[in-house]
Length: 136
Picture: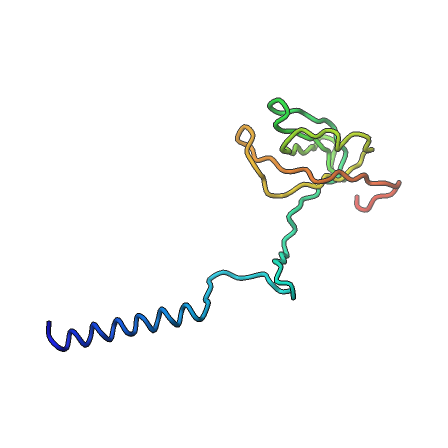
């Protein structure tokens, strides 16, 4: 090799080492961190839950208690409209003793698949109490 090529190769190696050192010292990242509090805990501004308010019409068992379908008529909709929601696991005891109308609180993101349909985790069932409700 000629002297020029040796010097060029040496300079490339030196610049590569300088570049790698700068990158490792800078602690660069390509993702955004949601750590905006003093404790460094991750704070998300996205609500992980969905809410469905209405009257429960029917509850179905799916695949021998692998899942549960709740048929609900949402508040302020016409009588023929119903919504079916598939929940993971069979927990009708969460619905027992609740008077209609209720609010189903469940995780928006599906956790697993039952018969090719994503099922949600039912978190809570809340009763709507009182004679008056807001809306049409």
